[in-house]
Amino acid sequence: MENSNSSIEGNNLRVRKLELSDKSKGFLELLRQLTVCDSVSDKEFEDRFKEISMYGDDHVICVIEDEISGKIIASGSVFIEKKFIRKCGKVGHIEDVVVDAGSRGMQLGKKIVGFLADHARSMGCYKVILDCSDENKVFYEKCGFKKKEIQM
Picture 1 (cartoon, rainbow, N blue to C red):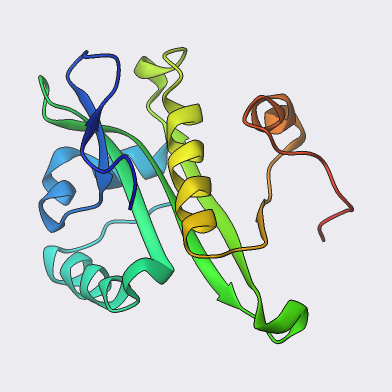
Picture 2 (tube, rainbow, N blue to C red):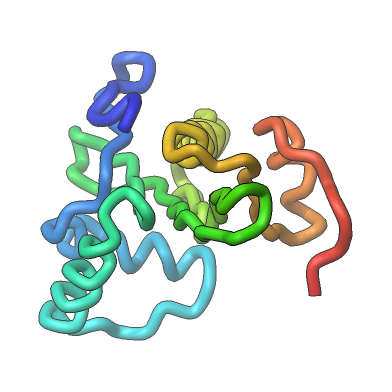
């Protein structure tokens, strides 16, 4: 995967894959800024982490860790859908993009989305799609996405 463990503008932030130890670095608290994320025990987290890890590069969760504070301040995921159409093509689905409220305005969301889209393309996806709310449409357009059709 490209850009793995790369620093962002030298400010002690790095993009990398989710690690098991990230539960203790505020990963679930970050997800709560996005949507409902109930309490998850260490065992439940480890079991789900192992389950997702079994998909290898077909399901990637990436995070940005502030190495000074040791906190996860941004995250997103991509999974690769394998199809029969388009000569057994693949589609990347970006999900669960979130940046900590105190870290917004630093282009971290754009870095996460770029990292995930680059990964999907490197896996041979003919398109990368995501769903978003109307208020996030402008952000994703800045990331290079275009509105297409209606999701229901």
